[in-house]
Length: 342
Image (cartoon, rainbow, N blue to C red; front, side, top):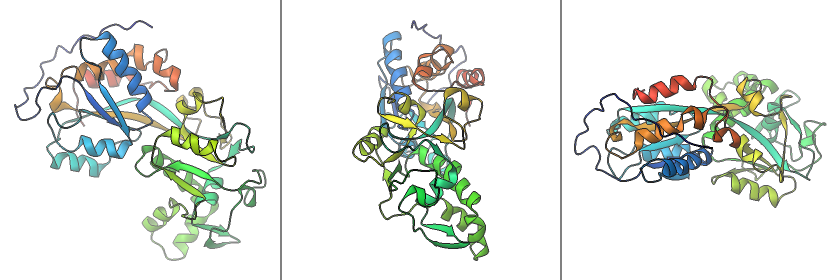
């Protein structure tokens, strides 16, 4: 693919005080392991096609990246935070307290969260949110009563699932993927099984019930993975019954090792995610520190390049790695060009 060098914005760049950021010769990025492969592709192409050094891209998870982003303004802080969820209010507040007051939110596209297992392992081919709630929740509804989770096998609560021991490898709490998993799978399953209603009927407040719905058991059946998806894949490689939670792009690059299940009867794909038919999908973002634009060489050019049609569009290289193009990409391009902050 040929890349066309993007022109810099003709808008005047606001003056930045000498203390805001000292000149550093490369853009520094950290955050989401889901966004990492996309950002790495863009960084490499950027370095090859622009007269700027290749940006340095690190992983660590959405929360960790945003924490570093919000540490302050200056050459010792990162310029861009990748995130597989939207920045939270408390993070915006933490940023502001440290002088990071002007943040540009950039949505790069969409990703789906898939549920995959060993390609030659048990037939985990179809899930419902209720299955994952029953498998992972510390408390489940049995014969109308909330009890400590008695289940050790998937088929004990759904006869259509394999007679295999529960061994789930899910993203750790610092990953943006975890939040989407909690919201769109565990919380939905909690409600659909009737467990949430039973929690509230037992005297719990609605807030406490919501928290209880997304809690996971601690007896070893559910394992938090704090590393990236390669660690989840390694766990599944060594456990025939293992089922992992991955991003669509990672799964699509490992179809020789993994098979994927449907969720609520829908198979994950670029098409089903772009239409909203697949129920477990989410937007992906990166956040730019506006105070560093015009000070850190190539920062704005990197952001514009990332969301250009030829990179993030439906025919761009990112789509080959599972990114679902954003139908509103033109709006995002305008936001970056005009440096519109949150």
